[in-house]
Length: 392
Ligand SMILES: [Mg+2]
Image 1 (cartoon, rainbow, N blue to C red):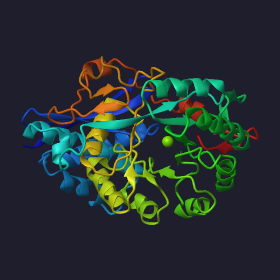
Image 2 (image 1 turned 135 degrees about the horizontal axis):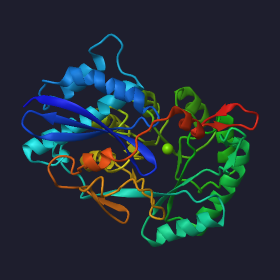
Image 3 (image 1 turned 45 degrees about the vertical axis):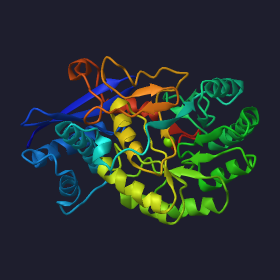
Image 4 (image 1 turned 45 degrees about the horizontal axis):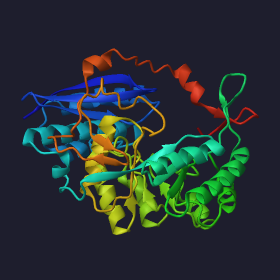
């Protein structure tokens, strides 16, 4: 079997652009993949066009060797844009191999450890009484792992950009999280994603305002380029960290796993380098008794790939599911994805179909608007009131 083509199928699903690819073979079997570098799709499309020329004619079964070719065959290896492209290709090759052998992808990764994948829910309710209501509703529906987001009032500056002041966020966020823990009791697993919007000092200050049992995990309070900054924060708080959704290789996970900086590995299969790289991160994390809590912000393809990863590793905590039980995001549109993994409450049922167990309707997808207007991206900027840039 040989790879015949790589097609770029950028589309829009729900509120967001999706960079989906299709790899076709000379035997009529094709595979779906997706890149997760949200907001930089044009750059990844350039990398994919480049890689298309390199993979045509290759045997799609040699997934690991193709990964090495793509990452290392030129002088300048890897990097976020290239591994986002490699991720999409690697996932599509697993889909092809599974379909060709008539087995689900988890069989290519060592077989199943579990029949379903535990999911966690995210409430985007603003800090306040609505948060308590939303969380109680989720608990009532059987979701016992609940993640919230930080207090971030919808204030715009004169240019229409969002305004965010960290000091104004941490007080109300800590206050309502403490109330939430009180309301939910000790059975709930409670986390928050701070979306790396704080400095070390601000993050420490936030943690000081929390009760000692309020949080089970704190996701990305600060940016992750410098492990030493996280180590400084580690010394100032006991709250478990969940870090790694932006990492684009096993090498970026290295200090976080080996130095015990993160307590949950937020691996993202559509950015880290696909299933090939994610399995290596999983094995490394297992050796340090760290469980995976994968980042899964996209839709059915990323979810399917991550479900097979989750099925195949022993060290697994919970999977993010983008579709909030209390909000409709449109990310799992069955018109675009007529075949996908089934969700039953807080469980994702692992598909036994050959390959990934997901199908994309490229004709329906072609009618969705993909307009990566860089001026529109500016609305995602966040600024302090003094006009300086702050983390989105
Ligand atoms: Mg996050």
